[in-house]
Image 1: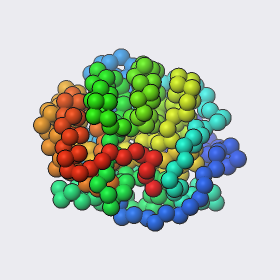
Image 2: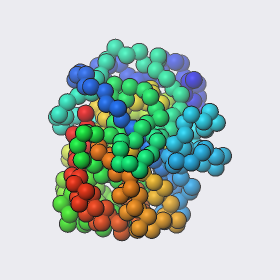
Image 3: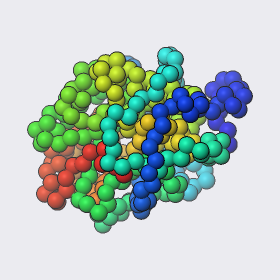
Image 4: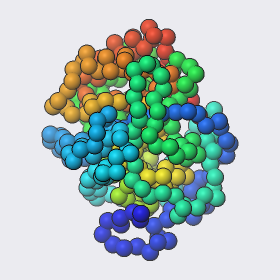
Length: 348
C-alpha cells in the first residue's frame, strides 16, 4: 500500500529517503531480542496548541473494541481499524539538511542494517497496542515486527524493578510547572516528548526541562498521522523540532521519538531510526488526555499502582489535572514497591 502524497503524485523514487550519505550512520550490534509488550497513546489537538480552544476528540489506544468514533485501539487484529484523520500541517519550514545527531553514547546499540531495502518495508498503517494485565507482569504487544531492529522500544529491563516515566506535551494546559516542581522535589528524572507547537509557545518550560536534567524527546512538528505522510514529510516533521530545539537551547534534542497517537508504519520506524532517533512507545497508558473529562486523582493513582511492572514505560499526558494531582503519590507508591526511575538512555 503506497503512502498518500497529499496533493500531487510523485515518482516513486522521490518518495524515498535521501541517499545514505546524507543521514548519519548508526553503529551496529545485535542485542538479544526481549519478549516485550506495548500499548497505545492519544494525540494532542493541534488547533488547541495554537489558540487554547477546547480540544477535539483525541485518538488513543484503549482496551476496548474498535468503534466508528474511536478507531485507534488496542485491538489491531480488527480489520476494520481505520487511520485517524491527520491534523493540518500548517506552514512549515524547509527540510533540514542535517538531521538530529546522536550526542550521547548508549549502553548498547540496536541492530541496524544499512542494506535494508526500504521499498520492501510495509506501509500498512499500525496503531500501537498491547494486552494489559494486572499481575504486574510485562504487557504483550500486538505488533509482532522485530522492533529492536528499528531501534524501537516500549519496555526497558524486564528483569529489574525499574520504570520509565514519560510525559507527552502537545500543548500547555497549565500543569507542567507543577509536574516539574514535583519531580524536582522527589529528585526524579523523567522524559518529556514535545511538539513543535509546544516548543514555540513554551520556550521557558522547555529550557527548564533541559536545565533540570530531564530527557526532552521529539513528538513531531505538527502531531500528524504519520501513516498518511510521504517519506520527505516524515523527515520534515522530525527534523524541524530538532532544529528549532537547538536554536532555542544551543544543544541537541535527546535522540528519542514518539509517534503521535501511536500511528506508524514499518517504513516509518526505519526512516526515523536512520535519522538517529530511537522510537519509544509505551507499556502503560490510559485515557487521560480529555481535559474536560478527567477521571480524577484516585483513578490516575490506581491505574499506575494496578498496572506497573518491571521495565514499564509509563505514558502520562501533561495536560491532565488527574496526573498532576496524583504524581507525588505515584512516585511514592512505586518507590515503596521497590522500583527505581530509569532513564530512556538505558533502553536496549
